[in-house]
Image 1 (cartoon, rainbow, N blue to C red):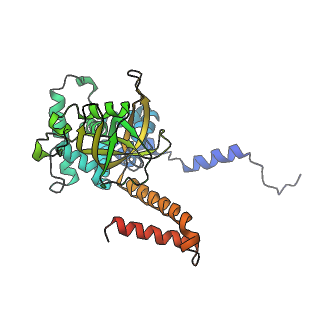
Image 2 (image 1 turned 30 degrees about the vertical axis):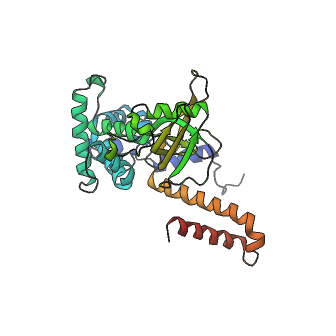
Image 3 (image 1 turned 45 degrees about the horizontal axis):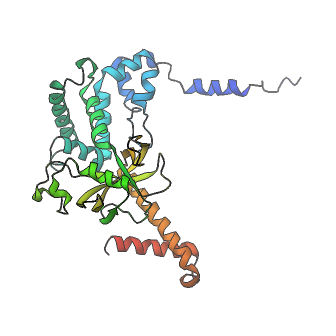
Length: 332
């Protein structure tokens, strides 16, 4: 045996040694304040990084590390406050705007910290008189606010209209004619809470008597229809329901959402689908629109390259079409 040869170390043992070198052995010796400050660098919340990730360090990891970490996550509301502040700063058009809507506040008048405190104050008043939620189940105000905003503003559930259409873009209005039995029921259910005058073709506006939020539903405009696909929330701008149940609607897409569940009601058997969704972040919306626009440009390029684009590389031809479509949609 070669005495100068290095001792053989099994791979599993090597991994254990490497992991031990990265461990913080003195963490348990720190005081509670320092431990909590360290945790602030790793905590996050569901959907904070992506609309497709509903697990997080604060809800799905740290509480199961140890009893001490479980206690930190359940009894120290400032961890939730920190995460909520970060959400509102990083996603002002989603989280800050939702808290502003919840508190009937002007989004431009208040900073994220002020909005957050207004949200906690309003929620505390609601919970004080709400017998549905037992007082024993109520945790810190910022955790309750997160759950309330997530359930009522970020998540969305409604009947589902499904028809693939790659031209659907946020803000661009369009009309549809509902004639299938399932979609006749869809529009009846969507419009049921509103005055009859809004089913006669009158514009659904505050000037015409709209109180509260306008009618909305999910339009699944991409195929195949399944969990994880992007759809959009459409606002009903005008609606005419005919005596036989057929309807003409004028719609405006207002938000992109990711479908988290699709289901069909057993009764009645008209095959009307419903779905649960979660709204996309601002960056996800922009990336989705860019990817959709580029895909559309590629389809155009494939059909016209042989006639118009043979003098330049195909990728450059796609880029020309992509930029032209962008300028057209931006009104340039």
